[in-house]
Amino acid sequence: MFMTAAGKEQKVRVKYMERTYTAKNGVIEKVRFAAPVSTRLRSSKTKRSTPRKQESNKNQAIHILGRVLNNNFSAGDLLLTLTYDDDAYDKMRKAALAELPQNAHRETRLNALMDAADKAAKRFLRRLKGNGMRGAKTVLVTADMDGTTGELVRVHHHLVIEGAGTTLERTESGILLKLPNGRTLADVWGQGSADWELLRAGSYSKLAGYLIRQVRHRANRKRYTCSRNMEPIEYAEREIAAIGQEIRVPAGSVVEERQKSMDCVAQYVRYIPPAKKEKRGGHKRGGGADGV
Image 1 (cartoon, rainbow, N blue to C red):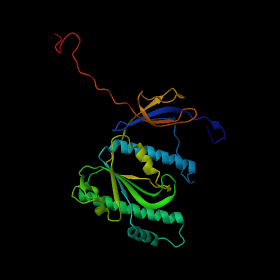
Image 2 (image 1 turned 120 degrees about the vertical axis):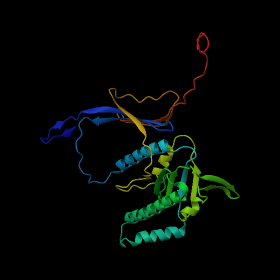
Image 3 (image 1 turned 90 degrees about the vertical axis):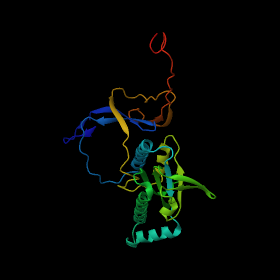
Image 4 (image 1 turned 30 degrees about the vertical axis):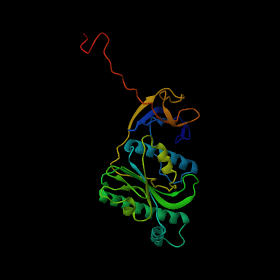
């Protein structure tokens, strides 16, 4: 319903849609929603997002990042965690705050530090390219929040990157990851620790949630950045007539997440379908391949 210029209520005609996303690693997402038949121009945004809207936006970002990860990364790729030692952190902090007035608001100071850290991480990405990782797909997340408690922590970075060209070398202190030219991540980062772990096969949707929940809300700021060579996920969209019924998934599927409104019009489900059974070979009835 909306109000016309004459002050009368008028119904908005809607159609009910279902969109299906299929990632390359097999994860499937189905979304049902009501869409207006005729769209009107939205007014410019002037008000700040409410906490409820911020939480909704965060969940949406988790779903979108999950699609990016599921469609572009696989077992053997890398999750990096970059942190700053005291000297590097103090130097970056002083440089970021030097450009602000002394009475700057606390959030302004935090945002300035985040911007400075984000630039440092992007310089690291350029150095990775110069050390044999050119062309690798990357997702960069700069964070300063504990994803569980919501408390502020020292700014740090998470980086998901293709692992092609890297090698593992066993040393006395443990297993060392080396870049294609033989250098280590810590050498190239140079500002603190550079931890890494290999991605395993499967869904990376939970990884997306882990990353996004560490990113503090900042108005009109992206929670992560991707390299330009990401492959877009395939999806199909259709109009549906039946509403009010829960989305069904194939028997044997692993449901990772399901959300639905009270009337079941708006729905979301993410699942991993059961593995397809291989067809057994055999002769045709009545004889061999030539039918004799």
